[in-house]
Structures are given as structure tokens and as C-alpha cells.
Image 1 (cartoon, rainbow, N blue to C red):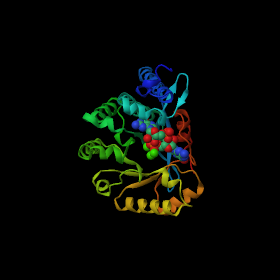
Image 2: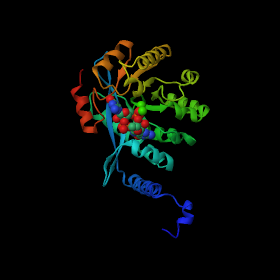
Image 3: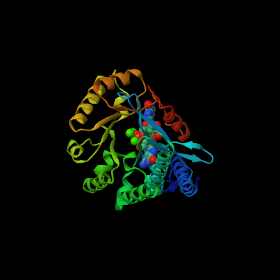
Image 4: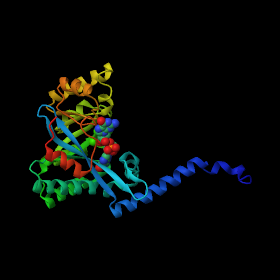
Length: 279
Ligand code: C2E
Ligand code: CA
Ligand code: CA
Ligand code: CA
């Protein structure tokens, strides 16, 4: 160590080195996870207050790590995007959602649309279109039971390409929602040019209402704007009765959040659907 001290600046400090080693190990684990299919989908219900029932759910991925247990997406999706592993993972999510919905079409009296999240890389070369088209055909899913959640930053990556892919989604008959609205570029010009059905108000604003006046004002403007553009609004991360009634009075159409349910494993979600949960 002392001998090397003169050229120490060529080396990463121990903390950085440890972080890099950990990241490399995680990347290896993630590669294996893709091979071994260590992923599962949880479902978080979406409720319509006017109709008083579950009107959909969002599929959210988790990684069943052999040693670490259930790993949340925030801890591996960024790495998956960085390494390209998001492509096979994203394909798996699309196929699994289609397969699951197809099964419900056969076994359940009451089926609701299921939404899934997409990453920018899946758009390159139209991969997401191919995968989705194939999965819908193979499982004979009703396209209107599949919903895609896209963020503004994903669209702004290549707006021209995005417009044509979104039109293709449109003609397939799937539903489209703009996720995390208010946090990204929020380009109003593009908002009107993209063919969305739903606008999801980001949890960042929902968390602030009703006490934070600015967040309340933003939520109000977003809901009014959505109505003008003929979009249905979904509030994310609703945790309290106060948030619920505030957003309800503003005319928010649907809500999702811990107040109703956390994301749950598939069996538990089926249970909720069967009980036809009324609020
Ligand atoms: P998101 O799309 O904004 O998903 C909503 C996140 O908010 C979920 O976290 C959900 O569990 C959480 N949430 C819902 N209601 C509440 C609430 O009332 N309070 C709080 N504190 N949180 C709430 P999750 O499941 O950890 O997912 C995090 C992010 O990971 C997602 O954010 C999404 O961007 C990404 N993600 C999840 N699944 C996938 C996937 O299959 N593909 C891709 N590309 N990204 C995914
Ligand atoms: Ca989402
Ligand atoms: Ca979101
Ligand atoms: Ca979010």
C-alpha cells in the first residue's frame, strides 16, 4: 500500500471499488435471473370511485433473488436499462401479462384491464410492437384489456418515432396511459399530439394534497387539462381519506394507492376481483 501511494490516483478509492464490485455482482445475478426466470408480477388495483369498484390494475415487477429475497424494481430496473437486460425482462413482462389476462378471460366472470410499464429501450427497432403483437395473438387476449404505461421522458427520447409507435399501439386496440405526469418535460404540445387514454398524476403531487397549496393547485390544473383533452385521470399513491376526497372533488376519475391496496401477488389480486370489492 505504502509503495503504491505515489501512484494512488490511478486507482479507485476503496468505497468506489466496493460499489463497482457490488454492481458487477448484481449484473451477473440479473443475467442469471433472466435465464432462470426469477421474476414475478404483483398487481395493484385501480379503483373508480363513481362506480365503487376495481376497474383495473397495474402489473409491477419484483425479482425473487435466491439470497436477497424479493427485490423491488427501483433496485434493478435502472441496471437492467443500463445493461440492455431490460429487453428480455420487458419481453417477459409483456408475455406474462398477456398470458395472465388470457387465463382470466377463460376462468373469471369479471376481468379488468391490466397495465404494464415500458422502458425507452423497448421502443428501438419496434421491438415492443413485435413482442406485444405476438403475445396478444398467441394468447388470444382482448387488446382492450392491455394497457401500456409510458413516461414523458420515454416519449421525448425520440418524439417522431414515439408518435408512430403509439399510433401502431392505437390500431392494435390497447389502452395507453401517460405515467408520472407532471414530473418530466410535461410538454403540452406533445400531450395533445400523443393518443393517450389516461393521464396518471404522479405521487409527488398526490402526497402533498390537501395540505400543500401548490401541490393542490397543480393537481387541480392537471385534472382540468385532462378533461379538456378528453383524458381520464388516475391519481397514483393515494394513501389517505383526505387525499381521496380532495381528488374526488376535483373530478379525478380513478385512484391507485395504499389506501385501497398495496401491490399484491396474483392469487390475492384474484381474490379481490372475485369479491368484487366495493368501497
Ligand atoms: P411507477 O410506474 O410509478 O409505479 C408506481 C409505484 O408506486 C410502485 O412502486 C407502487 O408500489 C408504488 N405505490 C403505489 N401506491 C403507493 C402509495 O400509496 N404509496 C407509496 N409510497 N407508493 C405507492 P414499485 O412497484 O416499487 O415500482 C417502482 C417503479 O419501478 C415503477 O414506478 C416503474 O417505474 C418501475 N417498474 C415497475 N415494474 C416495471 C416493469 O415491469 N417494467 C419497467 N420498465 N419498469 C417497472
Ligand atoms: Ca406505472
Ligand atoms: Ca407512475
Ligand atoms: Ca413513479
